[in-house]
Every structure is written in C-alpha cells, then in structure tokens.
Image (cartoon, rainbow, N blue to C red; front, side, top):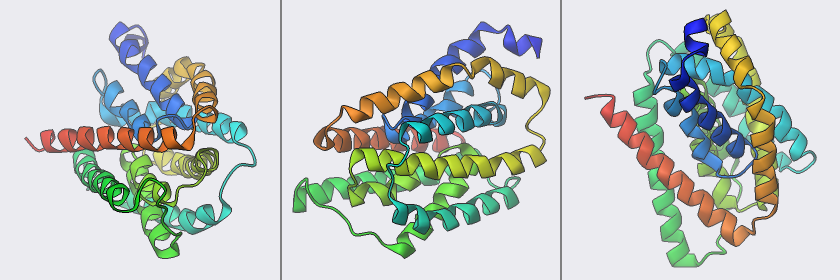
Length: 256
C-alpha cells in the first residue's frame, strides 16, 4: 500500500483522471469521463483502477445529483433503469468471461456508428432534429449501459446513444444522467465488494483522491449551466467521437 501511495507516477495519472471524470459527472464533456480507468491504468492494473475509482464515482454522483436536484426527465429514467439493473447483473455473471478489451471494442464501434448517424441526420434534417422517446430502445440501451458500466466504467456512450438524439435541454439531460449513474454505481458496489476489490490498498487510495471529487463535479455543472444547446450538443457529440476512436484503438490493441 505504501508503495502505491508514495509513487509519483500514480498521482500523475490518477489526479487528472479524477478531475476529468468529475467534470464529466457534472455534465461537462459527457462520455469523456471514460478516460478515468485507462489513464490510471497507465500506472496500475485496470481492474485495480476501476476499484479505486468506484467509491470516488459514488461521491461524485452525490454531488452531481445535488447540483442538478429536481432537474431530470422522469420518463427516461423509468424506461432505462430496469435495463441497467439487468445489465449490471449480466456483467457480474460474466465478469470472468468478458475482457475489458472486448467491451471497449464493442462500445467504441457502437459509439462511432452513433456519431456518424447523428452527422447524417444533421445533414438530412438540420440541427433541430430530435428523436422520439422509445421504451424498447430505452430498455435495450439501459441494459448495455449497465453492462459496460460494470465491466469497464464506460456506461456513458451507450446511455448517450439513446439520450442525446431526444435533445432534452442540456440541464435536464445532465440531471437525468446524474440520477441514472448514481443509481447504477451504487448498485455496482455490491458485486465489486463480492469480487474482493475493496481491500485496504484500494480504499486508502480512493480516500486520498476523494477531495478532488466534489470540486471537479461542481466545476462541470457550472460549465454546463453556461453552455447554450447549440454549443452543448456538438461539443458532446465531438467528445463521444473521440471516446469512440480511443475505445476502438484500445480494444484492437488488446487483441494484438
């Protein structure tokens, strides 16, 4: 434990990782928060990175829900949460069978197709085009988000595949995502504990990094409140595109 906490390279990767995840949790940058685990994995094993981040994510979720209190889309949550619970259960059952590289490759491919589809719709219908809510699609993407969130903390892209085309107000979208992932991460604590990931080393590292969580999350919420929809949506789609390319790269590299 002392070796990890005295390693400057660990902090060089972990501090920016926590800040970026916090900004994403506050609603700024959307799916860009996926970089947390890969960035920390430059210095420690990916599974350990995910375990250290999970308690920090839960604290960020509390701050994020508080920041967006009362601002959310109830129908989206009702339609997506049952699928998320199923996805977490599937992730737990298949934790020993599904590698992070496989998950990254699948999520990256889906996210890239999603961005290309958005570009096509903008070209065909204009920037004001919005999709209609669909309960079946919400349940499916909720399940995918729960599964990928459990395996590799990359639930953001599948969530946004469903949520972004509906074009909610940015504040409502951020508040809805805050509640969705607060519930998802809280549920993940149970299987992560059962898998033995919360040992003294990991929990101590989480506690050391935790002061960064509320500050970065509040900063993300502050930025979103000052962004107009015509800026917010292109920016968020751009971050999803970057995420998609990085996930594809990591997934393919993992098979070499």
